[in-house]
Length: 630
Image 1 (cartoon, rainbow, N blue to C red):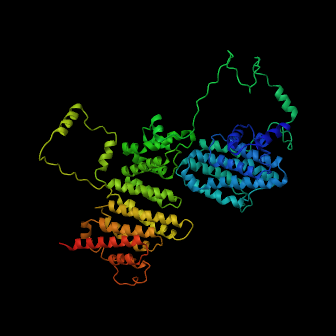
Image 2 (image 1 turned 90 degrees about the vertical axis):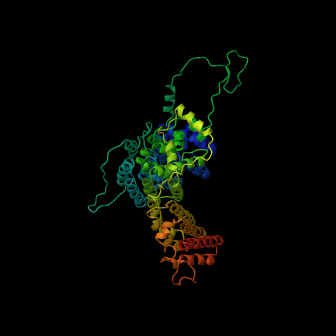
Image 3 (image 1 turned 180 degrees about the vertical axis):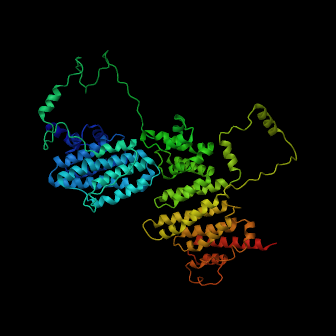
């Protein structure tokens, strides 16, 4: 008992910044939760509320931020908390600690396990660790506390998350995630009392293959064995006689005479037997720069190797992820056929996966953006299908949607630019260029020869490669505007939705401009002009400016051939022009685009909107004169 009290009191004097390096080895190396309970009993007795809050912050960090491949830390954590609650605390502090464990650790673990966004973004290893932590909370803490103290969380509180988690796991495309949902879901349902019509308890049964990840989770469904020294239920510490007997059985390792110098004494430099200590090399432990990572580590040579490297989630593999993100763009351009086969996998990583820790985070984000643009350049149709589908999903965050809009805009510019694809194919690794000494010499002589009145070769004609796939990018994004428009008026995050809506409208204008001579450009212009007055009714000036920019882009960038084939495109008003909130023109008959722009320049209270409307009206007049001239 005295030894136990000494160590428990010693842990109470830990400083805040040294708590994690001291307590984490205890949790991960202790042989049994009983040892953890003995050491943590004074920390968790509730006499120091501030220390208790700091300790639970550490527990949350170990569960939600850190990652440990071995499940011993989880079992020691929740098993130790259960033994402290059942054996060491007074009745007044028991309910407080149980409530903190359930509300700050247990239920958040259940929410994280059931969250669809976390399932979609996290790696398989992280999902295994989350499932292990959830199983350890229920097996090692919740069940023993409920059986001994009759304190438990109601089944109605956990059932919605359990059912949602099973459905979210089953919707994942990865077989490991689906199997985790089946195995853990069966076990979770078995813990809840679901009365049936015949009076028996309900159960859930799946047919699945027991993969390696399931073999790592299922041991936590079974309670851990009792500590060997526990002879009775009330025994809480190791007896002094057992401790003395075990200490006497330890034999000394060597019989060498010890030196007369104490460990705290300074060594004598004149002593011939003295040898100074050799200092070990110090490691900074800070993440490396991208340039140092690329220079000190082998770059991936294949796309699948690059994809596997970006999916690494362990902290020790951080440099591999950085190197793969920095090399992804070059590999995609070098292997376009292989990139087309892995479009969905790469796009999922670029959109949903978090970047590895790196001091040059902005540079690494630029590498990820450039790689996504490269993916859309070599496989535009497949990439458009994935990006537009993810953009319309409710689980996609604001930041992810902004990244998708930025990528689609750059993909459109990349595909429509002159000579860009030829330039990228030159990077690809196909060694078809003639680099013999003879050709090099002739090219050098040709560059040094001066010729007067030489005939310049005609500029090579290029094909707008974006024209064939413009509709795949434009129309799905256009169909998502009404949902964004409806959610950007009220709510806590209305300002974020309004900013996203403005960026989306401006991006659609760029996509339209890049889709010149496309077969669907007339339909794109018609639907964009049809939607413009409705969007202009938004109260945010940024949205109205984006609408006027889009209208001006349609007016100035529409080819003359398209206007000649559709001369009424800018002259006739749309059926929704009356939706602009101005009382003096809503009932005007024969409403046209020119009159709408004129009223926008006079009615709007934003100065920039007035300027944009005036510029658009001037451009419209010029295009009308261009059509009228012979």
